[in-house]
View (spheres, rainbow, N blue to C red):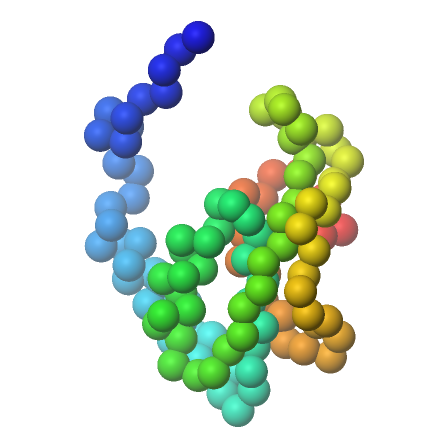
Length: 112
């Protein structure tokens, strides 16, 4: 069994300042584009929650949040192609402005 590398052992692909700047830009765009409305942000667990928290803190209009957990990998590292919802939304999104916050987009089947 191999031990995963520590965060300090990994190369930095995008520095923290660029990520912070982009989050601020996205929050400003959401605040502008949804002015007068209440967007409902749906974070896909578990990977998106930290990014979503940073994003929501910077959105200047009222918004609501919920989380969804989806699995297609099982115990492997390759998608099975079959998507299973392991945690559904807590509230209905019918008629809402929904923004999905996801960390990995690979097969495109999650929301197909």
